[in-house]
Amino acid sequence: MNFLNQKLFWLTAIVCLMASSSLSFAQSEEDELDDLEVPKPIPIGVAMFSSVERGFKEMDYIFETIEHPELSDLVSINLANLGDLKGVDRNRPFGLVFFLKPGTGFNIFPTPAFAAFLPCENFDDLLATFGTTGMQVAKLPEYEYRYTMQGPGQTFQLEQFDEYVFITNDETLLDGEMPNPDSLTKTLATRYDVAAQVNIKNVPVGMRKILLDFLRAKMEAEMQQRDEEPEGAWRARKASTANNLHFIEQLATQGDSITVGLDVSKELRKAVVEVDLNAKPGSQFAKYLGDSGGVTSYYRALQSDPAIISAYMSWQMQDEYAKNLKEIAVGIKQLIEEEQSVDDLDDSAPVSPADDILVRTDGLFNCLADTAEAGTLDAFGRMQQTANGTSVVLASVRVINGTTASVTISDLLEKMKARDGDNVDLQLNAETYRGVTFHRVTPSNRDAGSQRVFGEDWSFYFGAGERTLWFLMGDEEVLIAVHDAIDKILDPASQQALPDAAPFRFTLNMSQWLAMFENPDREPGEFRQKVNETFEAGDDRIVADMTPKENGLRYRIRFEEGFVKIVGLFAARSFGIPLDE
Image (cartoon, rainbow, N blue to C red):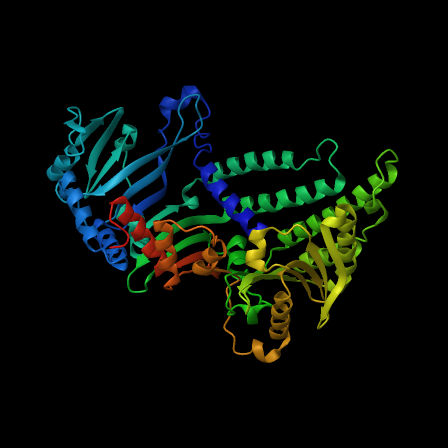
């Protein structure tokens, strides 16, 4: 999971940095500025609401789910204080356009700039509506259609361009040609209620190269070995950073656009959030994203099993990612070996029973290195409820030559036992089932909260088989659960007629999740009680999946209607509506 989280982190970072990269290196000599055309601000993104009327429609649905449709009337009454939005075309999109504004003179670095846009039905009525906000509206005499709006500590300028009015605190944006909001939002407004999009392709290639060179130099400097840093730790850290750099290089040179959108649907009784990453058609990045889900998961037979929370991933990696993940495994192995060598050489250090245990690292880390080199990440994890009411955790990853890893795992556990003494009870080879051997670790200081969730006698289990590594947590019921999971995986009949699964899927059943953390000795508050009742009534799942598409990847999160009701409950509370009505 850290692999995907790192990618999402760097995806966000590259977009933010592009809004502050260089735009004006074409103006290399100050004495030539007067002879050159001043670069225009570049629109690189948009954030929009599909329309006022569509927003009211979705708001009506939200308030209907909590049986308080009168809240829509309260919102309409409040709009009367804004002149009922007279002059605004309530059936067209409104929002913000994001620009990169070129630097001038010695300041070569561009700055982000923003302009709001409103669909205009009647310009005079719209000016009157602005006046109801308390802003002072006045015409600028030197312009035919430009006005100022002044309020406490803020001054904006506005001007009508065709059927839209643009509002900004940077009047130089209005001096040029503004983009057509209908063109910018046509696809977004059709698909989403609310959306934002950044168009990487609109950033000039030369500027992206400058930014990439800057980031590459910075990250390569970070990849250098630090003073007194162990060789193994450096190799693992360097490979991890190289993975991030590879993703940034592809996004900056071959990325097309990134879109985030929300759609609330009364017909489907759910809300959906989507994140779309699109690459340049025909590029290697587009091929990688489009082909990343082409591997059938070893754990596909388990994906429909009931669970409190579950996650599955089957991901085909690029060669560069596979090489770096292998290097991470080799680096961790080397780090453990180096620490053991230091313990052997340091005669002044206190002798511990753990020092006498030599971890045989080849088994586990050669297994992980070979698996990474093969280029597929295939794993699953879930928490489920058992027949006796306790919860258990199962997690597994598919590997190559996993049986050899059992030796390394047992050495690591024995070393931990030697260090912690009476704090843990260790039983090697506690369970073997269909070629998978499990070792059990039982902490002696289990707290009441964990015992309430996992049972009084819960333990950790670490297992290894020829094709899988396992981690379990729970009481004896967890062994029954893992036996059932292994049987389904190995049964050819259970694999037949199964639909193709997304390369990544996450599911959360909120009512069961919240129930695990309820303190039976404490009465929940009124609002928390209402939330619990809402989710217990059903429609309480979050389902997130990541699927390849042509030239890109789509990450979709679906919230069932229970979450829509929760939004309505928060709104009702803000209006002072009693929750028991």
